[in-house]
Length: 121
Image (cartoon, rainbow, N blue to C red; front, side, top):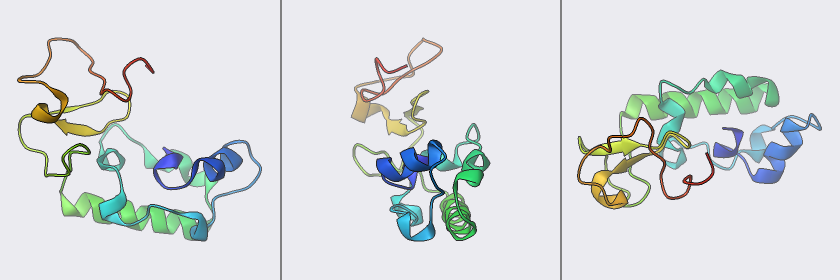
């Protein structure tokens, strides 16, 4: 989840306890840059709070609030608003249009993984 906001090396440093994320290290903190997964009801963004300094955490909260208020979910493949015919990857929590992932209807399986996450479960 931390990698939604910072570079891999910054996330690794914070996750190994070698420092916290600083506000100037945030790469993606504008609502339009954030994954729709940050506003998914299954995501508790507060679990990364201890990995950030006060300013970074405030910037993350502000961006997530703005993303939530926009109510816009974008398909990462076609970059268009998600419609009724869409599906969420159970690994990365990204939403995709059926047509962008080669589906005509919801699969009958309990879980579904996008091409990027398939095989990484």
